[in-house]
Length: 184
Image (cartoon, rainbow, N blue to C red; front, side, top):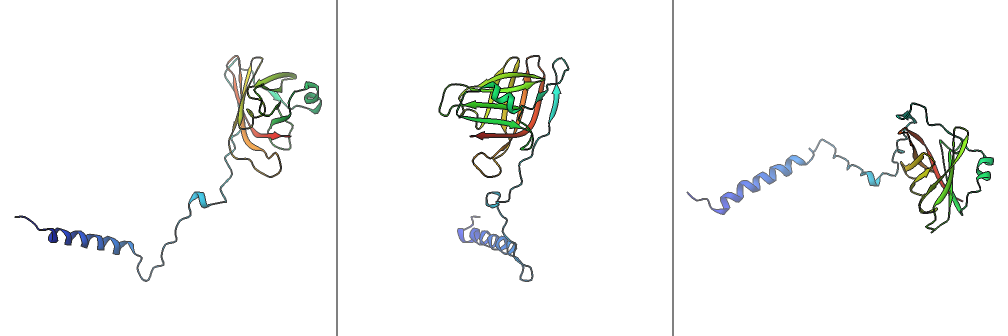
């Protein structure tokens, strides 16, 4: 027995009408409101700020990066037009300061205070190479700066949430949470 096309089309049409009827709200129920997409939501929550992770590995001694004073920074005589700094927040002194020239292939130069000693570090790419994150190297230490969210606040140099991962030559690692600020 062969079925003709009209007989096959009738059940398909009935199924479609049943699906359409089931998807319509009942007359006594309010219609569902369309959901807002994440892109349309201007009130996104702030990025999650990681906590300071203590030193792991190495010889067991902690990686201590101290706050830099104005005297430390001015005494370093860092070359460059513009600079960047990393601090726990706007109210604390930075633990990394670096300067570099815009549109330069010369490395950016910076300083950190390891214990009570000022150590020099460098990162390739000048100022432009630091703005979105950077990798600084120095004597027995590597510092990796990673942005963890968009810049917040206004002004010419708004800070971005960031982490600074310190890798010591003996295998010790410590992650600091804070803000990365670049500009004049």
